[in-house]
Length: 154
Image 1: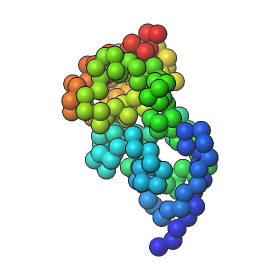
Image 2 (image 1 turned 180 degrees about the horizontal axis):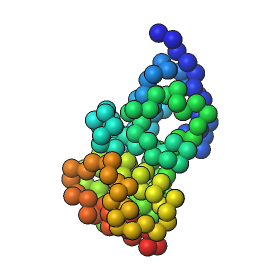
Image 3 (image 1 turned 180 degrees about the vertical axis):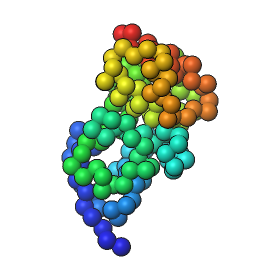
Image 4 (image 1 turned 90 degrees about the vertical axis):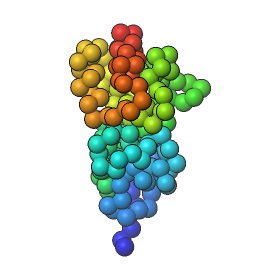
């Protein structure tokens, strides 16, 4: 098996990893770089739990070959906020009870961040559309949408 060295920025820091070129980004982030907020959900791109930002755009990392991120910038939930310095989206998820089991939360917050970065004041319908690739089995979506709306309203 041929291995390659891939360099990219992860949460604003340069990193280099050695991997099979077709290894998916999710597994490299979780197993080599310990970015455990990137969840291993369906593995088919259908649940959104592994969503990260690639140059500010949401992508499902389970379907992204590691070679596709050469020289790019990846942001995970760990790069959005920390337990001591929550991003406003993280605080709103907490305040609105938008996270129950927490499995989908990283992907939901990541998608919401991309939405708000591009459109600081989305409508409720735009929020719902942005979340369409993310599955939550616990909250029923209303608290998630409410949390994002709260941040959008400022």
